[in-house]
Structures are given as structure tokens and as C-alpha cells.
Length: 164
Image (cartoon, one colour):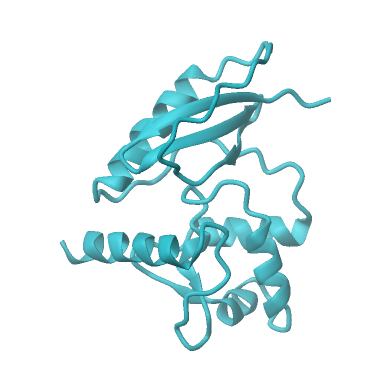
């Protein structure tokens, strides 16, 4: 059985709960205003360094700096297709977007547009794997677990980064 350790990260955009395994970041929640309750757990995982690193990187990101997130991601639990989509998405540069259809083409599966959306929906580590950078073919902001308003805010933040 896989052990998870949860940490609460206080960031400039709110509190974010992170779940860690022995291999790295397992899950990251979207920011919320009210501090979530710390789960009671016992674990042998030591994730303080990763947690501090992610907190610093997130705050740099929220403050308008280009950040290459350096914490390791635990890719277990994804199908090969989901992992391919998410790993490609992790490499989409700041301030740039790609359509679901073009992403499907980039991973050599051009007919899998809907499946790309499903794979992005399975993303457990938003922001670190920037699924908000994937948009509709007509430029519409669709399909984001944090809501369209947050997707728009993230893209606006990043467009400011690239224009500076």
C-alpha cells in the first residue's frame, strides 16, 4: 500500500493542500482562502524539503516569475496515454497555449481529442502540470477543474510574465 503525506502550503493565492509519496508530488489542490484542517496521519515519509521547495516555487509563480517547478512528480496511477498527455502538457511554455486537437497531434494520436480532455481532467497536480494552457480549438477556455475563471486568471498572469 502506498503511503501519502499531506502538507498545507500557505501561498500568495491561498492555501493549497499537497499529497506526497516516496517518489514525489502525488496531488495538489487548487488554492482556497480558508486553511483546510490538517489531516491526522502517521507516516515515515519525510517531505519537508519538497514541501518547502514547492511552496517557494508556487509563491514565485503567483508573484509573476517564470518558474520551472523542480519537485518530482509521482506519475504512478496514470495510464500510458494519460501520462503521455500530462508529460507533454508539463512542457508547454509559459504564456503559450495549445488546443486539445493540436496536443493530440503532438502525441501522435490526432483522433484522440476527447481522450486528451479526459487525460487532462485526471491531472492531480494542476499548476505544476499546467493543464490550464490547453484550450479549445476556437480559443475558448473550457474544461478546467478549477473553473473557467481560475483558468483565465492563470493565463492572464502568465501573459503578464511573458510581456514583462
